[in-house]
Image (cartoon, rainbow, N blue to C red; front, top):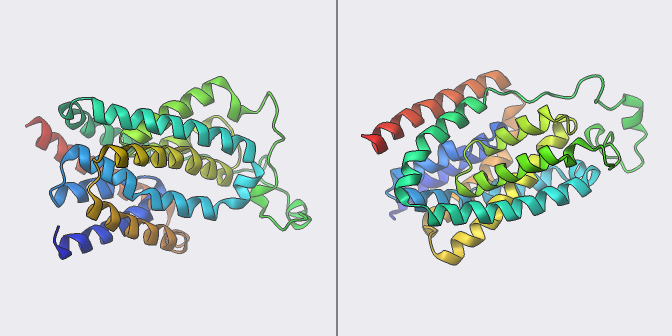
Amino acid sequence: MGIWQFVFLIIAGIAAGFVGYSVGLASLVSFPATLAVGVPPVMSSATNTAGNVGITIGGCLGARPELRARKDLAVIYAVIGLAGGVIGALLLLKLPARFFEYSVPPFIGLSALLILVKPKKPGAKDAAPKENAASAPDGTSASAVPAPAPSKRDPGRSPIMLAAMSLLSIYSGYFGAGSGTATLAVLSVGKVGPYAQINALKTIGCGFGNISATIVFIATGVIHWPAMIALFIGSTIGSRLAPAVVRRVPENIMRGFACAAGLVLAVYLGFRYYG
C-alpha cells in the first residue's frame, strides 16, 4: 500500500468515525474505501470491523454516566455482543466469498433505509426533572439519573429484546453496516430507556461484537494491517470531532445524506457483483 492510499484511508476513517458516531453507519464509508484501494471484499469487511473499533472506544468513554446507570444491563449486552461477534465473524470466514458479495448490496440498501428510522428521544415521561438533576449527589447528568431499578419487568431484559440484541450482534460481526442504527431503533421501540441510555447500550452491544470479531479476524489472518491501522487512526479522530459538529447540523439533513449515500453505494455494488 502506497503512502497516498494510507492517507486516503485515514481521511475515510475520519469520515467513518464522524458518521458512525452521529448516525451509526460507519461501514458505509469505510467499507467502500478499503475496496477502492484494492482490498478483497471479505478481507475488506474484516479490516473495516477492526478499524472501526476506535469508534467503540471513544463512545464507551463518552457514555460512562449512562453506562454506570444501567451497568447490569450493559454487562448483559456486552456478553451478548462478544458471543454474537464471534459467530458473525466465523460466518464471514466459513461462508463462500460469493455469498458475501451477493448479500452485501441488499444489506447496505437495508442499512441505508434504517437510517430513516429515527429513535424516539426522551419526552416528558422519561426525561429527568430539573430538580432531580440538580440534586444528584454524584453530579451525573440528567440522562443518567432516571434509570429504572433492575427488575423482572425491565424491558431491556425481555426474551424478545435479548433475542434481537443477539441477532444484531451476529450481524455486527458479519458485516455490521447499519447495525448501530438498527440497534437504536430496536431499543427505542422496546422502550428500554431515554435516548442517551439506549445510545450507550447500543455502543456496548455492537461495539463488543466488533471487538470479539476483530480478535477472530486477527487470529485467522484476514486483516489487511496497513488499511486497518489507517482506519483506526481516522475513526478515532472522527469520533472525537463528531459531537461538536453534530450539535450544529440538523439531524434530518445528516440522516437524509447518509441514506442517499448508502442507496447509491448499494446500487453501485449491485451492478459490480451481480453484473
